[in-house]
Length: 328
Image (cartoon, rainbow, N blue to C red):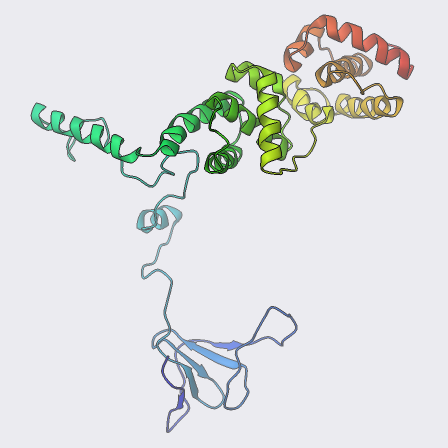
């Protein structure tokens, strides 16, 4: 930065606008002050790259750097077209989406098919490019695990944000060496279960086990091991997290949902939730609420939505109805 000087003659009147600095009322805000006269009326001259005092004409800073774009855009499409920044980092991709890929179209830039000699050359390039991008054991592990994680997450209808969080979590687990000696499918399922609990998403061990093909006991054992090693504090998941999901799947009326929440609160006070499966309790309460509010839903529809049997609903709803004094 050049030394600050006062230009001779008239005070400098740059083309930029005058910035009236607000009074110092915030602790984190440090207003620009002229070191010569103490004025806060500082002018930013973008043409010359200078900071100038509007009262005494002192050039406070010279040769400022402009970090903005040197082009203009008048629409969102033009802005995206002129932007030269790359795509954001994607943890769900083994290479984080930052490496170059050789496509499989075997066509040139004009769309014309290339010769057989060029096709063979590109095939060899793809093979060696793939081998060079996966060199360490962790990279090979991520290549398999992240594809499996994305597959299970797509079956569970998880959002991109949850998938990215789960992929980052798995990378941390792999870097800590907690994957060694364990099946990749077990660790992936445990990571997804922990991520769903972190985001308060109603996904049970049975659902994850059904999609991943891993026994629920193995998922629970791996989850407890990871939580212990990383000293995680994962929030507890309760049956109440299933209510919005079931209401959306069955398209229940708002009055029915209110009745479900009311009966569930009463069931907690009576101690009817302890020691029983959460899906069975919620299924019975949903069935009772639908009967009371005239929302026509069969036991089979409710059982399919929550992954329980109709026998479970019949056993639970009679007990809950008797304890709560509900006449269906």
